Image 1: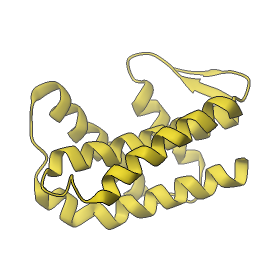
Image 2: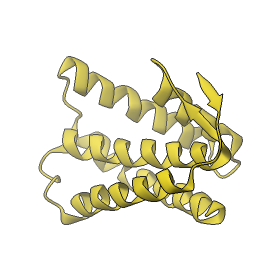
Image 3: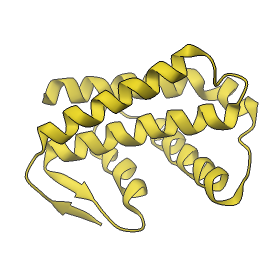
Amino acid sequence: MIIKIRPDKERVKSMLRLIENREEIIASGTLGRFPTFLAESYYEVIKELAICILLLDGFKSIGENAHKEALEYLQKYKEFSEDELFLMNDLRIRRNKSSYEGKMIDESFIENHEMKLKMIIKKLKRILNDKL
């Protein structure tokens, strides 16, 4: 469920520091041998950036489907194509299966989508920078 709140720039700034740390780990290349962990890291960055956008827009997602709804909220932004929205949701599902069912994410997923995931992250950051 998405609820209305007062925009929270301080929380966003705090989250952005954590996101930077996650991106440093991704950029270090240490996760390259572990595609599941790499995909999970991309998911966390994308999810947290989406949550930051919600917070700046004066919303918060709560409850069982909070992360799904946070990603779906991005449909409001014309910057994202249907393919990108689908990819973000697909990544969410894969990450959940990994975390909750122990299913590994195949290396081919990263090979086929890493550039798109990086582009999504850039778009999310652009939106955030415009709001800050």
